[in-house]
Image 1: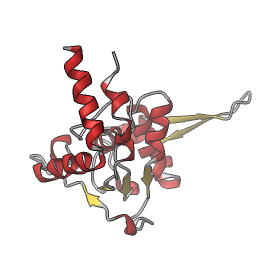
Image 2: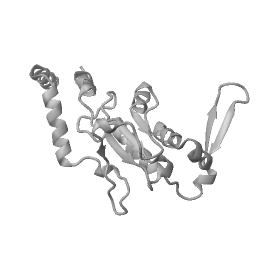
Image 3: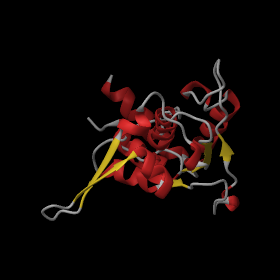
Length: 190
């Protein structure tokens, strides 16, 4: 029995919506959660875990992200060169000064699948330490902060109009005979 994902491989070719996430004043874990959610495509109605159907994400103001509690002092990021004695440890307080985008990358990397698809998803993430970025031509759609305390949450990513627009794009991109073959295969298996 063919799987639904194999029939919908064209999903990864549907034009993507570039998303803009402003990390200024946001908590690092919440930013990572939202970005991983967008990169995986879980906010889309045609999400499939075996297809790269997520949107490219641009994160700005990575230098101004926040950590709760004592994590600025206690959280340590490790990197190994592969040679004996090549372990380097960086506290979060030092890493935010030198490479603030590494905090976002590491957080998101641990939230994505640990396979080749997760590596591809991380490849469409762009992180910038300040407000300036190189993606003005992509017509970025900002992810609005929602919720009680006006922080980023997963529920506020897509409005109903955007969902309808995504379905319209999919139906336009699928040839009519492709839809008939999908529906006929489903009907035969039942």
